[in-house]
Image 1 (cartoon, rainbow, N blue to C red):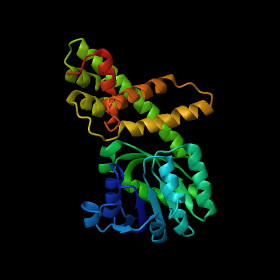
Image 2: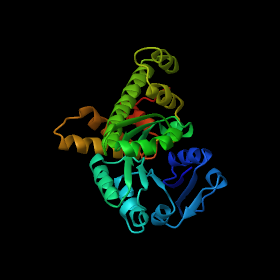
Image 3: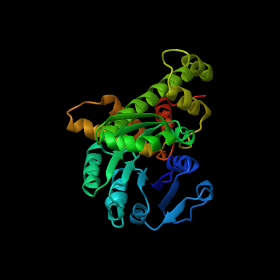
Image 4: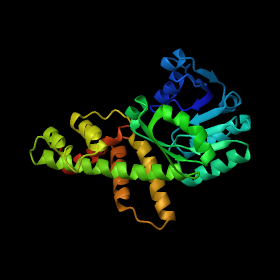
Length: 294
């Protein structure tokens, strides 16, 4: 069993940390404004002053925080992980961040004597709760071999994509596909509703054909039931699409569908929807149509 420093106890991180505790690992985290309470505290997770103290107490460090600057602050800021990093420590970043920055972070951790793995996840809150996440890994062969047993506790499909940053590149591609599929499902269900069809039955029928997808299954139901409490917030998906569009610019690549999806998300933000689940994109299309799915 390992002593693991787990930094980032949000919608995704909290259940992921719980699975590691259930597997018998000892976990520490960074002390927050409010004392740690609930299931994680009951299972023995301990709080320490800062990321430096977490690193000093850990053999493995896992981070899952919102954005690239957050990862950089945790790892390299004042009182950061690197100040307490011990030789041979495995650092696994499971956030969704910029691939080029990830390569730089990996270099700096390696120079400090650690091993770095980027392992962003897909599957949303449900995947985290059910330990059924898809995990996309960028690492050396040695780093992947060390990380894989821990990743298998939190996920169902673990794929070593390539070297450092490759996991994050795969995650950006994932977020492009997810955003455009949400848009497609939104448009299909909105069309069916406006035409007077029973939308629930339309969705049921589509799930049996070539249009079947996890997005149609999970988020199509959200759209019909009007349940937009976040499993994954629009503002976080916006961040991921920014990474896609910035990367496309550097590659001289056109991503018109991605740009359009980003504008629909921005329309939601303009209606105070930054914290809606990303299935809430349908509301922007509903506003354009002056029609709400029934």
